[in-house]
Length: 401
Image 1 (cartoon, rainbow, N blue to C red):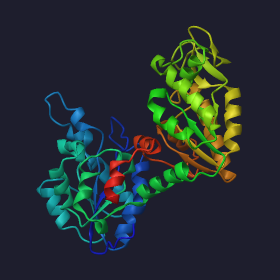
Image 2 (cartoon, rainbow, N blue to C red):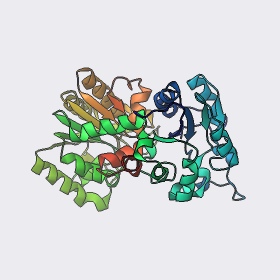
Image 3 (cartoon, helix red, strand yellow):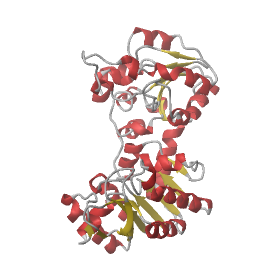
């Protein structure tokens, strides 16, 4: 972010899509807001002013019964007071992001001042990448800064199209965006060996592309979560009522064969914590993952798998973790995910580089207070997944164009 911001208005795309308490509408996790502070403060300290724009949820998909937008539920106004506290200065708010109020407040903004625009997704043009909407947004600022990696995979008006209206000398990545790109690039293109990727989650179909890509670069591929049982089924195992994508069995076998041909070690959980129903009060037992009784389902990795996975992780120099090892939202099935978090932190302490991305794996690290014990925690779930799959993200390409 080496542009001169003095006397300039910086139009900054942030990701303030933070969770709110459904009753009080109070912010329950301000991680995404805090992540944008270095970029905002640097612009202000260098004599610029900041116009912030962000989406929040999907208001046009959740209209009120009369077909109108539920403004009170989806307005960014609820963030103003807390943002003011974080920045230690007043934050102005515009009740729209395109209309007369936004134009007037942006025009009058002085150096050191901050303006937050209303939810960009109140407008249909946002998700359509509408050029007219993007051009109106572009007129509000002198410089465009994209610091919203979490939306970089969307070709929306405020993330991608707007960049077309700024030349190379007047658009840039913010610090968060740059860090996301640099850290992911380090893992994918310049990993210190041995490189271990830990991939979890429910479905093989969600992770096919990332698994394909990773097999080309990793030494070890740890597979956990519900997706592991598709692999066991493909290899002729008995998985009871565990999650299985029958239409992905051939894919699973093909991935195993590809790994063998590349000399990559695939680690599947040798044992599982299984339950007789998907419920916090379910009866449980530990069984081999390829011999689960009828009527039982695997909901977490077992103690043997935890030990094997942890040993591999701790012997690694580069670690990528995307996705949980079990049903993380139910405490009794969260042990595997938490133990992997501890192993990743331990490896990092010994000098490994670790990148954690993906909702539940990030949640595990954060809930356990380990976010500073790993090298980098990605804020961009879907965007990081697509980046790791090797896709060019529109929000990144637009800044480089």
